[in-house]
Length: 263
Image 1 (cartoon, rainbow, N blue to C red):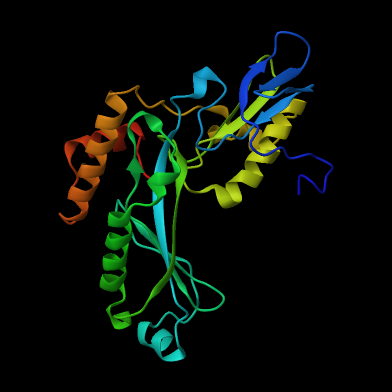
Image 2 (cartoon, rainbow, N blue to C red):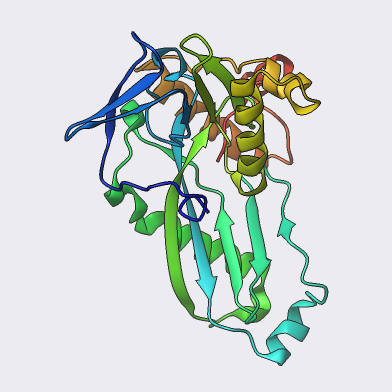
């Protein structure tokens, strides 16, 4: 869509600095710079170019499996007749979908944070998470014992403490940003794009009056507290899931404060 609208996409051109000392915005890379009147930051899981936003998200790795196509008999055996999108209600939840060619996508549960908020390709190859998902899949669909998983993948999610994106302006209104989609970005990114354009243009619209646009999330603490807190929260969520939902005092405190952690 960007290309269709006349925009140019420059891959492998990491922006190292935003300079707003003069008119407009200058985005510096290692090989050059781009000058524009205004800029939009959509950096997803990567560290924000705005220092004030760097603790408002953490990258959390989510994992998914895809089965081979199911036969008509296998589909009948599980009773999934209306092709609904499904998810369970655990703290560390699973989500599952039927593809057009009747494969089951099954993902979720593990939400893995790496110390320092690092994003690395090797974190996507976590065999233990895939084995755990396969086991959970067969617990959910025991009728499909023996089915093959033909695909697996992982990716980092930009998680915020309130489970939805935040938006705003910086650098004298010349830079708009949106981040922290927490795994719910397929539809929300289109909404966020409209919000950022409204903010840059100074338009007062119904969407810019929403509390999720007007207010910022509570930031995560810096390391080493972040890693310890996130992993302890994961332990507490798993404990609650195995104790019929009875929540650890930490989770009750986070609930009362409207804070959380997941992918």
